[in-house]
Length: 240
Image (cartoon, rainbow, N blue to C red; front, side, top):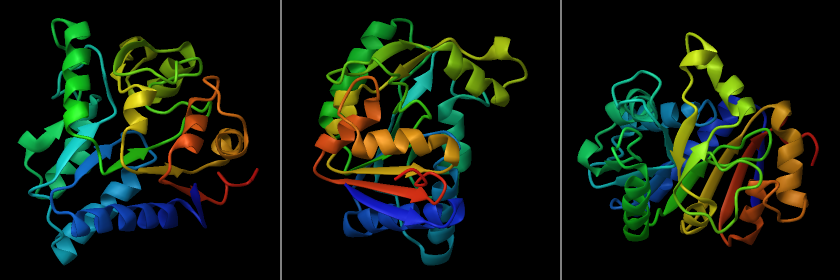
């Protein structure tokens, strides 16, 4: 693991964006594995700024996203499809036909998981972006998820529903299920880039880097991947 400790969220975001931009510059046909949530927003802002100012092109880039809520259409303002468009895709020159997310309103969710697994076997990310949950989850792979898991239907934990409720008008509107890449899918990426900020993540960071590899802390599996870069702010690194 290559661990980079930065001063704050802004520095973390700039460093992570620099890494992703270099991937695209070195390979204009790169496949980017992307994540949602508050952690990568600053990274995407820096990528968009670089595109505006320096012209880095994404027209031949393909993307695959980690997860999507079940029951939210792509135009719902809390869907991850909407998140990706408003935070990145609409601000760069990527072809939306080259962007991929699980379909949370597919009529047969088991078939949708199979479709997405087949896609991931075809489009292995050159780099997979990850955030980290305070309990060590990656994607929607909560503690206890088998490390051999592939794209699957997840019943969200009460803790995750509560955490995500801040983004909805009420907790009753938060979806109870999601589709998520499995741990095995994530590990198939050629390289992994994780961004983590905040003291509330420090314990999970310590376990991920220094603890044993265990399904009880899904992110610990990254110790087994040969090319992992973790960009932390000072608070997230405070227990290392």
